[in-house]
Image (cartoon, helix red, strand yellow):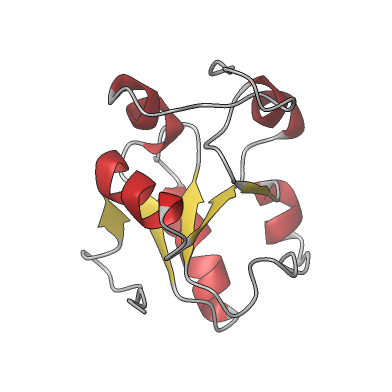
Length: 121
């Protein structure tokens, strides 16, 4: 299994690579946007944990523990911070360059909370 290792300057994946790694089960997509944005649309199979909760010390969901993580924010501006948090807790993590906004621009799938076609809120 390919393990990610967060390193300054090497911590980002293009949306297409992130999608490939999460689609094949190599990594877990971890969406850290707030609940309203999550409900509107997220990467299929993503685990949701808002950044505000992560920053407050929330425990990573059981489905994430022991697995590489691809952190996803809206535009990627604070995604490096998002990837650093799981790393500080012993999780291999990277972030999606450009966030979910770039994910959608690349034509990659988005699902709403019901599993149907979503949108970016």
